[in-house]
Amino acid sequence: MRVTGGLDRGRKLKAPKGLKTRPTASKVREAVFNILGPAPDADVLDLFAGTGSLGIEALSRGAAHAVFVERDPRALAALRRNLTELGFADRSVVVGREVQAALADLAAAGKRFAWVFVDPPYAAGVVEGVLRAIGCHGLAAGGVIIVEHDKRNVPPDESGGLILTDRRYYGDTGLSFYRCQQGLSA
Image (cartoon, rainbow, N blue to C red; front, side):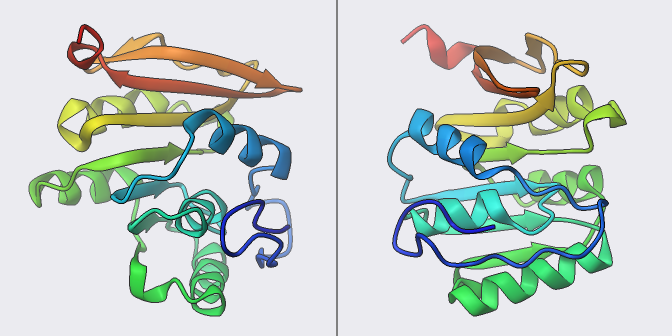
């Protein structure tokens, strides 16, 4: 698995052995960033980060800073190694906690993100709760949440003041994009 764009394009990312960590496929990552456009000079959040491929891709493409949330020890080790080897350790924070607890801490600290990547185990049934926990208060002005899912576990069209603005499929993998509903009228 390699970084698909930006200054670190082509550099390898490490992943733990086994099927527990499921890195986002290169063609799906390329599609995400083609849709999003240029990286913001702002913070991004990578939830259920695994190897960190989405947040690292954002950093490679120019995002100012990334917060990665992952609780699996093997994935955390690979994520930390990837950040160090790519030189992103100083532009990132790794949170080794359960996603809902980390989101509560980030909300309490008033953190807001330009891009939020949500890539949970597809059948876990956690996406709606995660969307509600982030809500509009967790997004910077013009921010977007990108949820990766499969065709059998499609997230809702609305949740917590967020509204679906785009949904695309790449084989069985789906991408759903959410923005704050009140920000869409302008």
